[in-house]
Image (cartoon, rainbow, N blue to C red; front, top):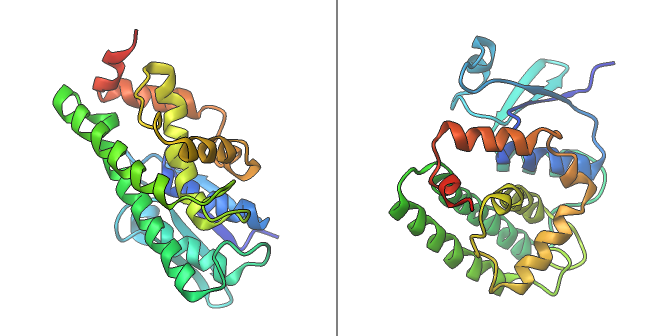
Length: 225
């Protein structure tokens, strides 16, 4: 019997990884279908109003329903699937977590600029923006090991793909973005060892990301020793 959930994906997309991590944490079976975003299939464009991944296709008795936007997908997974809870039970805490998920998306916006710009000044501006944002994260973190303490949450699922970028960037140059943030560094290390995080991408992720940097003639590569 086919899995009732299909996740339309791209191998590098950090937003896809959020959904994969949530599904992995809950032990939910799903089918993952990777597409080429530079050559989007017609069937994908028909079900994705924004032309973006992820899209979660849910099979119901009435047919298939396509959900788009990663946070919407993660919320649906949380509300409908069994397994461990990934949101706090308290309404205020839950809202706070949702806010930090949005903050993670803002960080990804700066990361996009950092990895794609060819301009040294823009790179420096994005680097400083990331330092400023992670100073806010440092202040918000609990004693660990995860964002809010002992329980892994959707906020952790949002930030794990962010930290994964730096696993590749660190092999190119030392950016120093986390050097003053001990709690962020500890959190990053904890997430990197999480099984759900490790399996959210393929073994070829580092090579694919490096190829992406090369295609964009990224300023980051010019920092390599």
